[in-house]
Image (cartoon, rainbow, N blue to C red):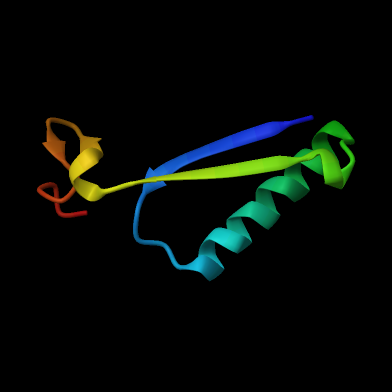
Length: 63
């Protein structure tokens, strides 16, 4: 069972996340010849103050 984890800064819409899940699942299904029902995509979102870019938290880096 392929399990794909995506870590990203908060702020995307539900529609964007659904599209991301579909695109990743399609790539895994086609590349690995995996059954669709076996593919898992998990999104972990981080608050901007909990995500570093360089030496700064994302909210201070203008993200």
